[in-house]
Length: 270
Image (cartoon, helix red, strand yellow):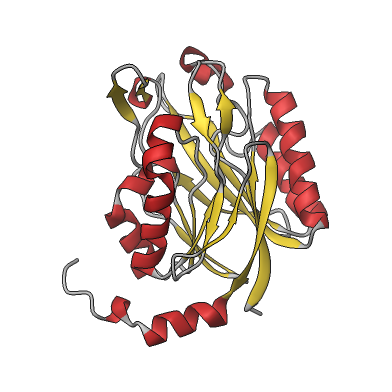
């Protein structure tokens, strides 16, 4: 039976290169979210290992694997749906996938999305990153039906590609997750406006947990994790620290927004 109203949580973390410590901390925050009645909990991008680029192949795991087994047990034990923002998944050759996972309240892995768009950016004096040096892109748009409605999956840099979000919405997505490690320079300029735009354009809820603070590679992430409603209103925004944010998801409200401003029925270009 589908649920029309429920509490969702987004977790803001400062992960490092110690996978065991990261997983322990993530579990603690997820448990805190569940204690506060969250039924759907989302972790940020690379919450399991946020280390040096050269160490990514060594840090990657198979799926299923030891960390996903712990995440499965966590979701099952807390009776929540858990979106493991993204972890580094072993791939073919010398590159890894950046993979977002959805576990249901029985601990079943019900969806897997490999990040499509790789962040290859050089802003002089601010940030220089080439994800394609160590990571391979996915090749699929992923949605999954749940008791909370249809979830659409994306990761971080995907946010800049509105065609992905339109495809997710046309595939039925009502809630779209954007687990991120958004860099500070680009985040300060574009994070909120892009999140709100994707929510408004597609009349969806956006759950966007972000990393915060400096990674071992020296990159500073923006934080400001957010939950946005289908009208583009920010329902929750994280402070400048590790924390959990909460918001009520109201699917009846979403249906009213879509009914009163039926722009999704007016699409002319695909």
